[in-house]
Length: 328
Ligand code: SF4
Image (cartoon, rainbow, N blue to C red; front, side, top):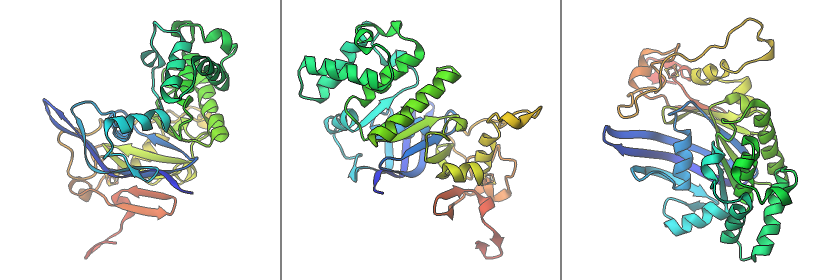
């Protein structure tokens, strides 16, 4: 299958009063058409910055300093603001964590949907209204003809997130990027929203990138997982490989944080310590300070990526054997 998105050696920096923050340090991954990919990691790992870099939505002090972002074989980094705006509305849709901050509280849900639809299609207001009702129906909002006249505060958190998904899907995007879409919702609603995204993916054939700190959420919906730490990809592979054959100590740590039914009295094991200071990134492995298996080389030299098989790679010195001449 053809790649829809290819990110190669992406480096992003932020210029702050405290110094330059090296937020992304060589991020690479790809996503095929119709595939769903999860980007997983804790706060500050670089997962959201990766997507903001792809969407060209970095704050003014942020800058992609190196690398390539190919969307549909087109280099996005060279596009003008206008060209990128077209792609953002028509080909890439986004859903953010808190729907209340993305919806305008003083406009009805219908007028917001109609505005988006009319911005991207040459159709009449009546036709846009019909499409808006259809979209609300698609995301499972009951009585859409009535609900379309209501304001965001009249919707529950889960229903607001459905409205956001409907807005993102209005222009039938090839890629839906969902940044922690269920973090603000309770567990049952979380499951419903993820189920909805899965169904929409199957129905429309769009690709999905799900950004989350919760590895436990991704098994049902995603095909591949990219694990990020300290602005780098530390491990990536199919869901099967990451869950059944994880090799990076950080991925193992994340997996130990997922509650299991057969745990009995066993407690979840949090990963001790803090993420690295990205103004002064460590010279070696970014996880070295917290890694229970860290060796001397980990502190002084960054580990290279190694393919475990064609569906799985990771960057950890444990994957290499040391001999007198160097690494093997
Ligand atoms: Fe741990 Fe070293 Fe592997 Fe980094 S390279 S994860 S510090 S063993």
